[in-house]
Length: 358
Ligand code: IPM
Ligand code: MN
Image (cartoon, rainbow, N blue to C red; front, side):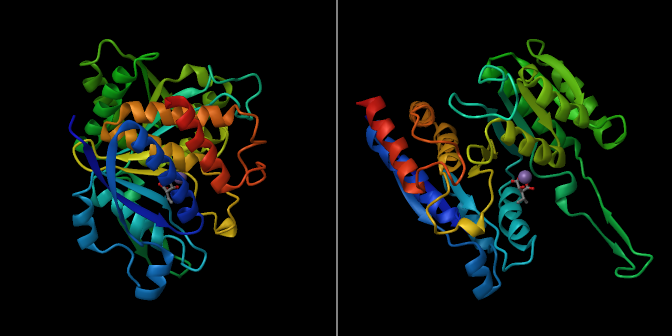
């Protein structure tokens, strides 16, 4: 049998990034050992410290290096000492755009043993995936100011939607819905009643591409209604496809109904290139270095990485080990008051992997 070996770039980042990344790597080591694959970690120190010292966020040369990797693992970026937007745009968005990771895949799955604020809803009701466009829309930064800092100031930020960008996102979503093979239903979440140019393109593209997927049920929901249905009837959803900005907003709502930012993970995917995996939560600077943050979202992101590089069995085992941890009764909740330390929760998942495979 040939040995699989993967090159994985690791960007621990700021705040709690390094400590949760450490736990995700602990899990990676445990599962790699059991499943018989190898990996090489290449560490990058992008984040606030480096920026404060060198004024550099992410050099272009690093982007080129990262293109050679099998995957990228990102902890978190963001630091109160740095003006908002610098690290987010300079690192996170530069990676997403620079590596053309045009899909942001965010599962909204309530695991057993996890509390949801939705009354009378359980794991059988909350299990859908948001496919968020990740390289266009309002995030592109096309725009500017006129008469800045005067009473007549105008600020314009354009929502950019290209036919190519919209189509590849929608096509990915149809393929994903088919592969997922659950309800086989794809909901387009838009605001086509107001954004009559931008989201008209989304509607037309959805219908045209959708003709190639007669086996997938098509559904439409305006973004405001989507928010309502996600709370009232989350079981209606299977896969939701949406633009960058709406995807950002509805996935925070999604994270909360699946138990909070302590469990939500996401993947920035370039189906033809290198993808990047991250917990959805931020760098939580006030908890940095305290060993109190629960690393399950970070471990879930590692599970998505394993699935993406082709280690499907490993990903399945990690997910089972997460569920086993959640249902063990050892965690009061997923907050900093869970009753267990960051490294202890990482150890629980690693031990559960061992008990599941041996
Ligand atoms: C996310 C974050 C980012 C986004 C920020 C940090 C730029 O909120 O990954 O959802 O808006 O995409
Ligand atoms: Mn967000």
